[in-house]
Length: 391
Image (cartoon, rainbow, N blue to C red; front, side, top):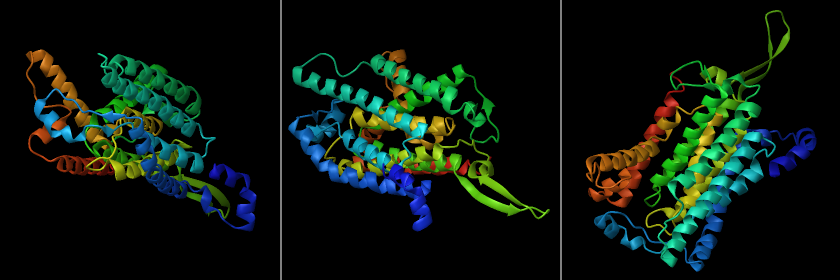
């Protein structure tokens, strides 16, 4: 809203005050981080007290007696704390992003859709424990239906509207290749479904320890702030003098310099990712060990979905598994555990899945698991950024 207001008084800001910096995506991204951080810290205690009054305390239960004993102290800790993150993200984005940008609008639509879906899932889990119902939240297939429907909608609009005049947007880009491969609508949609649904559920699986998912999402969000900026913003814009003596207008982009897909307008989505980063930092204030509040599906589903959406918009779907290496390992550990359990008739690969619980049972303290996974996440982020120069 502040950005829209400044656009309304653009001539005054330029001609009278000579203030141009407000148009820079980089400045507004920094302001979005700070705004969402402050909003999360400000509203955090109020939301936590409200959750306590509503008695939405979590009771962690696992199919492992030793793990239940290790997490017994977390009983009745309020959940659905993802509302704190959503409050920070929405406030910062509405203030500093260009709301006329279609990428931003679809991003806000995504986190609203998945936030509502996650909130319903959390509420059903809580009422199941209160009313002793046999059902524990939404079934997996029910969540998948809504996640896939969302991905299909986004893919259709991206391919047929946003990327209609952007050739790079309709291509599949490999992390180590200089050129993309053309995709049709069907293959583009299938890729979008896999990325958004997979990322959303992978973050959901990672959300099992104090600060684990929050810190890892913050790291990945920071990477996508840069990727959105590089995909859209210019390295140099201005007139240069050619040998003939004429002045020629030249625009050189970061995307062309680094051989990345060029997606005009994606920089504004970077502000939404920056807001997510700030909100994660603010939520970590309350979610660090020992946690005052848990994120719940209302936070993990939209956070993962937004990461996947940013990867689709910037055409970095195949870079996402490197950036979010922690989430990939967590998801794979669950798939392997479930598959082997069924195939072997009850045997397990890990003591418990997702894999962070395995390390906890092996003797690592919870803060040790979380910090070491953060370090691994930072290494994955650094590796992903290094691939940009290997093209």
